[in-house]
Each structure stands twice: as C-alpha cells, then as structure tokens.
Length: 200
Image (cartoon, rainbow, N blue to C red; front, side, top):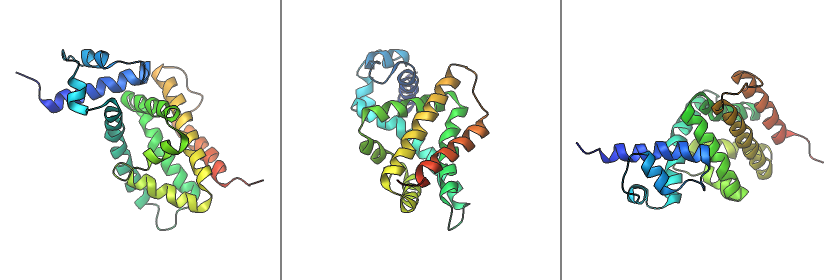
C-alpha cells in the first residue's frame, strides 16, 4: 500500500530536522534527506515543499505554532499588567521546554544556525511572523515599551544562543552545569538584566 502523502511529508520533515541539527543546514543535501526518509525520488522535497527555504520555514512553523499556543495560555495567567521579568520568564520557560525532547533540541540547534544565516533584524522579524508567533510578537512589543528595540533583540539573540548550547549538551548526553529549573531562573535573570540594566 503506498504511503499517505502527509505521512511522507512528515517523514521528510522529521529527517530534515534531525540531519540539519546534527550536520548543519547547509551541509545536508536534498538527496541525503530523501534517502533517509526512504524516498527514491530526490524531487520529493521539491514536490512537498517547493524550495529549500520553504522546507526550513515549514520546520520552524511546525514547532513555532505549538510554542506560541503555550505562550498564549501562560500569558493569560499573568493578568493585565505583567512585569518585565514575568514576561521574560515566560519566554524562557516556553523556549527551554524544547530541551525535554530530542526533536525539541534539534529545533533549538536549527534556530541557532539561522541566527548566523540572517542579519539580526531579519532574524527577529522572522520570529515575529504574525501567523506563527502572534503571542511572541505581543510579548516583545510589551518589553520594547520598557526598554528599546536593540535590547530586546539582544535578549532574543542571547536566549537563542545559550539555549542552543544547552541543547547540544543534552543531545551529546553530557553533564549539565545545573538543573532545568535553575537554568530557566538564571537565564531569566540574565535576560532581564540585558533589558533593564542601566544605560551609560
């Protein structure tokens, strides 16, 4: 019985995510992904996703929508006037939740690669996509009122880089310097300092 098209697409995404994380987005070929997914036709990626960039966007969207749904649920519990630290902790908790699964760690490592692929402003704009990250965009807007756009950008870049480094440790089964809860609290303190620290 032939595989369902949606099953094939999911298999391609799963293998692309794993291989991009382990070997690098630009080191992995379309043929390697299709072969790993059990597809004989190399054009399967183009058929299901169009371009390679659209494949990457689909990978980010698949997890990004789930994360933003969680952000929305947590944001609703913070009330009408959350503090900057509460908002930062929400961002950190949701993003760091990806560390609990193998595929989540793969996602974190892929996002970190894209941080180096795009300019800083292109990167932050991609995170604010209305369709994927409605609540993230709202949270960043609230934080920007407390400080400025450059600090918000620095906060996001630092969170992305440090959490990807931790994801690498988890993926390699290496000893972590602290517990998950301690990591979230420490990173929240650091990022809040980036946002609200005194200016010269």
